[in-house]
Image 1 (cartoon, rainbow, N blue to C red):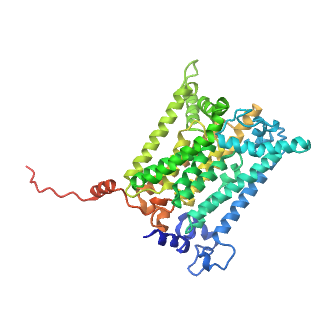
Image 2: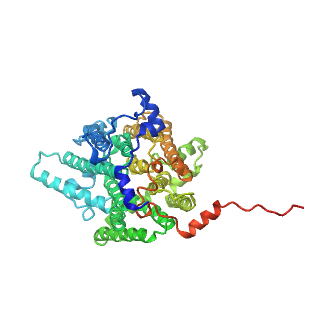
Length: 502
């Protein structure tokens, strides 16, 4: 099928209705009368024949705005910065955005990296300074101005706009499946963690980068993903599945164009800071290199069980406890496991019976990084949200994962409150259980995505689209001749032996 005809179907083809195609939604719809009927007036008919204002896309965007407004309300008890009696933990409203306005010296007019080391990659530091320094200037002229509150609200408005833009990108990539974006718009993780940190700066840039790749603009995709990687490192991981799929489809030139552009962007963004303020710029890498096992990670869970089985004799340590005191070895092991996972993704990309979709491999790579990382902050769930929606838009497993994230969120704040007051809110085993549920549901999603790759007939996106709507130059492309020949040989039946056994 030609590119032109595929694009036309994206705009005007038959749209997916979750109450018919998704088993979980179909079962839940029985509470309100059952799946959408054959004669129902559709909300997602083509734009040139639309007579209703509330299309599926507009409903999803409105839901995203509602979720983000509720998030702002949920964070409102902390906005004044007067965190007395541990209100930031008892009301579950802590946010790095407000705390770091003071910790990073922005309230004193310090320029990030020049006057103060910053614990984040440079684009996040630029972002903090671009919003924080004007607020400080206003506060210097008006002592009554609550600078922290203004800074938080300005950030919340900008980050929320990026979140809505991410929903819009998902809608643009799934014109025939607009209700998939509702998974993102209604996600409890979005409600609870949207402005805990500046993650949506990287998420928004990565989403636009994926959209540029889907529109067959690899240089623009590299620019946007490179900027995302200059804000948080994880968008750079997306180049691995892009390269693998391009290798399988013999479209390596497009992948190298994107990667080369990203390298130039990273240098252009980092060098103006790295050269004159090297120590302050290096703070991000130094912090990640020296941090011990953090809460909620695979390593934390292992360390907890180490403590349950050791003898209590001085010097008696389990393997995870030993790793916590030998950080270089912990770093090496964590990185090695991630590299092995990436090699597994490479094998999956090249050996699967049909070329996987980009979003499927992207989800697996980012999920593997979180699974094996020694740091898994509460808001890192946002990294996976858009990739999970694009990779496997099925409500059942997605909601199970989100329920686990909500349990972890509550348990995490209980741990924070216990640490702040030196009075445990609940036994540590409760937090470990919540951490295990979060880890387990992410692993489950990975298993389900891998199953969809190995059995592409189960992939719901490919029931709606001919190939990969995110693939760009890969969409509809045949496998490279050398790989196609290998797959053909593997599928060809072997001739029966005519030799009579003796």
